[in-house]
Length: 273
Image (cartoon, rainbow, N blue to C red; front, side, top):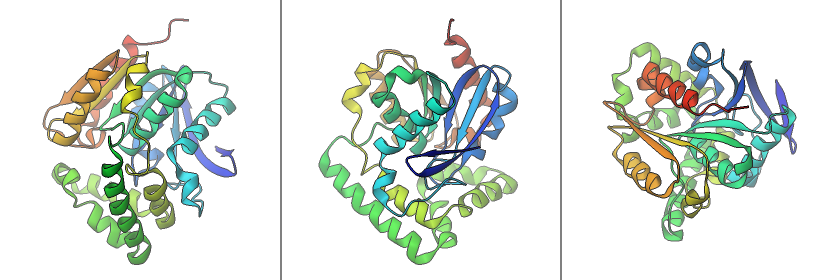
């Protein structure tokens, strides 16, 4: 279905029955990222799979300010309002995890539980953010100048995704096709509006969150393991799972194990009506 929030059309796929679970994919992904969870969770949860602004079949506005995390978090709130869900479980991966955490900080009353896969509360200092904004701006310009294929060639070979080279050729091809299907303007503006350098730091707000949080990181993803370690120390009700022999995209590399961890966490923290 399509839901229009402040003139931006969102492609949203809904399936299953039970408490709502909002699924937020990473940069260059789309809602198909989460299809593997349908047979595992749809009998107990209503899965709300969203193409984030600038991705998949959702709109790609020309103004990068529309992509700012606070604006997109408000869109997620509006989607839940339209669907008549006053609270939901939130699961986000990487960029989607930053969005999910931002949503939880801005609208905690809407959150039952929060699951963050390889996600960050942002950069601590303005100096770090300024450096990152410069790097994101250069990458955004290259996407528009050189096209999607050149960008994807570069993106799939960054160190963050090194462990994905062990995946089957079929799986790697599917990921590549998913990335190539995105709108270059949408990805460019996502970097400018919702990149790590552009978002506010949510580090200090972690201690205010009073619902169960699950942090999931891959053993081979040292950077995000360090971030998760620091996050857990600030969160009131956090669990942290480190997945052996996995990198940044755990749901891709060991999907069955990831799904089992998510299912067990949600089962332990199901709403008691």
